[in-house]
Length: 367
Ligand SMILES: [Zn+2]
Image (cartoon, rainbow, N blue to C red; front, side):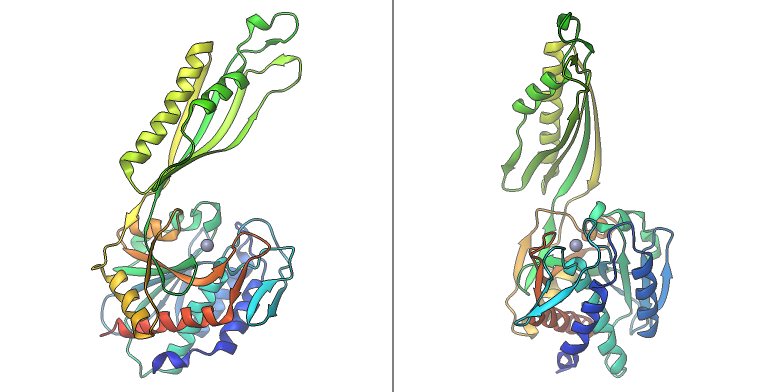
């Protein structure tokens, strides 16, 4: 069978090499160069856009390319990652992330390309590969990418955790909010009545807001709050950064409205003002079981005897951006676990299985 071509040793070697190349979001120059060379060696033509995203193309049969995507940046600021293998599982040495998010996705794509290069007799559609930058900063690279350059009709993003078989077919919309409460300064001791305490107003607003889990597809959070200058000054400004997510657009709008109203009501009670900026971070999507990426992924899992585990996600990936741009994508698990923490790890067998799935998907899609 085709998928026996996946070489565990080579895949692990690629993965270990990638995680040892520092690439926190915003610092992807070195890994970008490395990947450019790797992709060219694997037979792809490669372009890099101004943001640093790589678009690689591998010719194939037929006119409809498939998009394969992962991100090259890693979350936070960790560098000097030292991978260790214990009983078939790859960890970091312990004080950094591993960077399997999303170097595992990148390594799986490279291994799949290596198998295709070794077997030119296998039929597969043309492949369009996007390795994005700064995904962890809020899908920044994928947003900057000029999607009109892509010809793919559908695609697969390798950037989910969980057992192999996880098929993420829906993800929420997210709105980000920057909120400023503007009060009035006064001396806290001699004439507090002349001031409007922005911290007090913010506190009342937050206390009145629905936050946390709103329902099974809606969440909201105040993530950052800053304000005040000195003990003896009535503070005139508080800044907050907040978010709301929902897989239902109307519910998302309701939630943002409720947060807006809570701020305005509290401000009105005290004579403060509110600046409330909402920005759409990404939009929700839902891929139906009869759409090509869902069908192709489910068939690949089934061909390998792996149980399909359809999943709705609570977070965004580059898949949201591709879906919004009219390229329906599902997101598949690479086997990564406990991501964004020093406990992050990935089982070698899971990564191998994820690569077998991708190879099966790509070679089956020609038929
Ligand atoms: Zn990721």
